[in-house]
Structures are given as C-alpha cells and as structure tokens.
Image 1 (cartoon, rainbow, N blue to C red):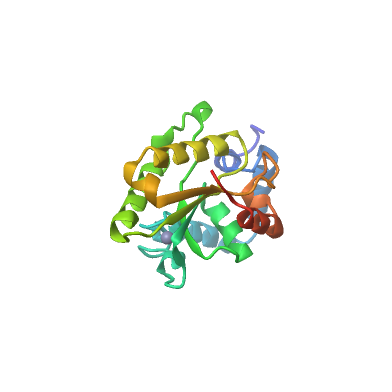
Image 2 (cartoon, rainbow, N blue to C red; image 1 turned 90 degrees about the horizontal axis):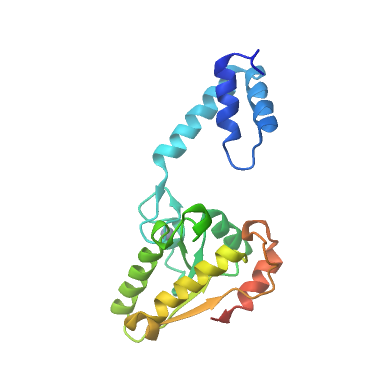
Length: 210
Ligand SMILES: [Zn+2]
C-alpha cells in the first residue's frame, strides 16, 4: 500500500493496533473517515480527547468514573459486605446489566499471566487486600464475601487461586473474608463480557466457597 500517503498509512497502523481491529478493518475505518465530512473526524478526535482527560479511576473500586468515586460506590443502597472481583470494567458492565448483584466491585485491571509478563504486583491485588483490611478494621464482627469473577480460563483460575491464598495466609482476613467463586456452569475459556445475562445470573447464584 506504499502508493498511499504516509499519514494515511500511519493512521491505518494506529487503528490496527487497537484490540479486535485487523489491518483490513483499520483501512476501512480510515477510508470511511476520509470520505465523510471533516466534522466527523474532528468530533471524534475531540470526544477521544475529552474521554481521556475527564475519565478518572474510582478511588475505591478502580472502575472508570467521572468523579473520585464511581456511581456504584456512591450508591448507598449497595451492599458493602459483598465485593465482586472482576478483571476489567467491561466484565463489571456485563454483571451489572444482569441486575442480580447489589454489592460493590473491585476491578483488578488485568489478570496474572506469566506468559505476558504480568505478575501479581502488576494488577490491583495489593489494593484489594488493603481495602479488605480496612473494612475488617472498621466493621468489627462483619464478614465480607469476596466473589471472584475472573474469566473461566487458566489465567483467570490462577488469579482466583492466588487471591484466595493471599487471604488464607493473612491473619486478619482469613477470619473475616469468605472467598467464593462463580459457579462452574461457565464454559471454560469463555469471556464474561460475551456471556449472556441468564448464564451470568446462574453463575452468581450458584457461586461456591473456594
Ligand atoms: Zn467505585
């Protein structure tokens, strides 16, 4: 495609580096934007910029947020004694859509994956433990249920097991946190944000202690 202007080639390169977009789709998007009125590209650029600048990470659960605390953490009607652990905000949305879960979340921001060089310190496990310790100190005698909803694949399982072990080996938390995992009904290798609502509902209802 060297007969194309360099800035178009660069743009195609940028788009193909995004998840789920191959070189062909990237080229299609770039050509579409070239043909469309200028406003579309300018508007898109502005919205990307605004989303990047004004979106924060919730200080409590690490979900994407407009304020210090996300709308879920701000909602006083949510059950603080249940924390559901997800890989990213997309999984949170998938679970939230089912409406079955009324507790709070903890967004790990990734998954333990030695193959990709991601260790436990690269995701928010320390933050999770600290959060649980703070709850345990603040609310005496209250049990927190930690529902681990990482994806049902090797990395998701390894991450769930790691978190469970960390809690088991923590003197304060081992007595105060009950760790559960989504039911095994989820097909191995499935992605939570692609699973239908009913299956997620059943998996949450059928969760079992680890
Ligand atoms: Zn939050």
